[in-house]
Each structure stands twice: as C-alpha cells, then as structure tokens.
Amino acid sequence: MWQQTTDRNAARKALFVSVPWRLNLKNRVDGSPDECSSESTEMIGREELTVMRVTVCQLSDERDGFASDWEGLVAHVKSESSDLVLLPEMPFSRWFALGRDFDPGVWQAAVAAHDAWLARLHPLAPAVVLGSRPVNAGSYRRNEGFIWDQELGYRAVHSKYYLPNEEGYWEASWYGRGEGDFTPVQSGVARIGFAICTELWFLERARAYGQQGVQIIVTPRATGSVTVDKWLVGGRACAVVSGAFSLSSNRVSAAGQATDFGGQGWVVDPDGAVLGLTSREQPFVTVEIDLHTAELARQTYPRYVRD
Image 1 (spheres, rainbow, N blue to C red):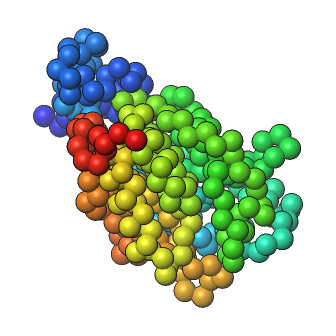
Image 2 (cartoon, one colour):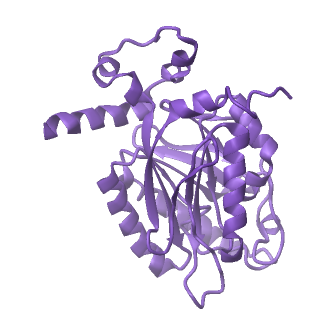
C-alpha cells in the first residue's frame, strides 16, 4: 500500500510540472470530454490533477536566522510533499532598500547572493518554487519574479512594476519598474499570476488575471509588522475579485533589527476564506487546494459581472 501511494504521489508531481494547460478542469465545467488520455492521467484520475499542496512561509531577514529557517523549510516541504513553494520577496539577501541612496556595491552583493542561492533550490524539488530576485537586465535593474522547477530550471516570468519609495522601502531609488507585463504563466496544470508586494493593491490586475483563467495569484512580500492585518485584507480582496487562490510569503525580523518585517504568509481561497497563516510559532504552512474551486468561482459573483 505504501509503495502504491508513493507511486501515485510521484506521478501527480510529475503531472504538476509538465502537464499542458489543456488538462485543466475547465473541461469539467462545460461538460466536454478530456483531450488527454495518457496512461498517467488514467492512473491518477481527473480529480487529482487539480489538487495541489501549496506551501507559504516567513523567512528571517537576518542571515544567520535565514540559514536556519531555510533548513526548516526544506524539511517541511519534504515532510508535507509540497507541490508548490512560494518564497518572500528577494529573500536571499538582507533587505537593501532601507536607505534612499543607491549603493552599487550593496546592489551587486544582493544580485550575487541570489545567484548563489538559486543553485540551492534543488532540495525543494520536486516542488515548483516561486519568488522574486534582484537582477541586472542590460543597463537596467529589476525585481524579477521567477518560477523554478527541476525539469525546466529557472524561468523569469514577471518584473515588478509598481514600486514604493518611502522610509524603509526606497525601491524606486534602487531599481526600475518592469514593462507592465502581467501575462499569466503556466506551470503544469496551474495557471499563475504574479503580484509582487505593492502590486497586490492594484486589484484591477487581479480581476484581469481571473478573466485570463488564473487559478493562483502569488504575492512575495517584504512588509512590516504593523501592517500585517492590512495586507491580509488585500490578499482576501485579491482572491475575491479574481476568483483565484491568493498565496503570499513574507520576510520576518527578529527583535532589535533595523528592519521590522512582520511575517504572516497566507493561503486564501477564491471567496476570501483564510485557509492558512504563518506565524513565529509556525513559520511554514502547507495547505491542500483544488484548482477546480477557482474554475467554479469565476462563474459566481462578483467575478462574472462584465466590465
């Protein structure tokens, strides 16, 4: 029995990474037959193709704490058999946008740190890993959203467009906005939209994602402790207007640090119900979601209302 269960889980993960979009349960909504009749699909069944285990987290901004948190995250992902792991915003270096004045040395160190840590994503496999990172894009500097999996490797999928510029978050002074491209990205059977931190508040983007068939909107964050309740409201609103699951992971600060990041990653269902929250006591949370729920939610209020 154990071997049969392991085989089924392995096949489900392989499908999550590689199955084309036409296997989406959209077919079940309109009653039309499946287009795929592969042996793997027959073995697992159509229901399981839409069920995934998603992991959100809060990771320390302080580097020694981060290394310990990372070990804990890897162990959690393995024990929970996660299909998808969302990291916080630019997690692999200390938060560099505390000061208003751009420092080329600090920027390059952050870029190099992220380059080095990307090679350490393999222990999270076979889960798909999502997050953001600082990059040099020609003569420009960007905050780049990415998806990584062991089959396709690293994929740049979005550049942060809406940039704050205030005390502790001088992002527009450190890097430029992206091209404003909010195109959904496909990862196996999941259709995903990125809303990196501040982008969450532009809810017209969430609505557009829902209209494009997105089932999961991911929000890597770096937000303060005094605003955690406000950000959760934003995540719930994002889910409701889009009809998609809202996932977010955040940085967290220890007492006495220059930063004051508040943690509290979340998983919210398409009607705004909170399915899971991280905390200092529980920094990693894994929730099983059914993508078919998002397919059905888009047919209900307020998602069906025409623009």
